[in-house]
Length: 124
Image 1 (cartoon, rainbow, N blue to C red):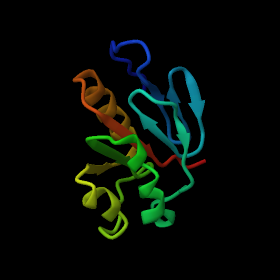
Image 2: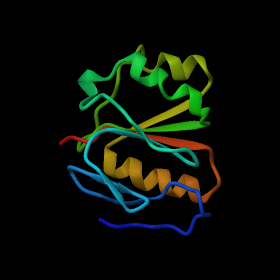
Image 3: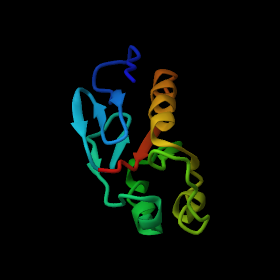
Image 4: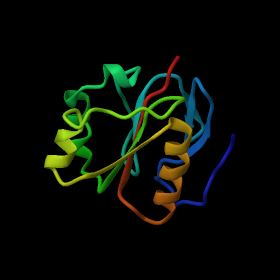
């Protein structure tokens, strides 16, 4: 599936997503990644929702997003609330959805000018 909204230069845009990779700004990523709106992408350790910890979530805090879209992989899986505690304590909203839906939602929110970050779990 391909999608690409018109967004200002310097904005991270998710161009395509498959079961095993996400293309951001034309570059394929085959492992989990943090996609902030206007900062460099960051490799992210969890390969599955079962591996996701509060420490992984805490890595998002320096980006200071208003909202985090958590892509849980090819299927919708929810993290335990204790794992999301760093975001909750910081007053940052979080929505969980499967990774393809998270990519679409991220692009829509970016096109609306929201300060959003996509935390995408990508299964190799």
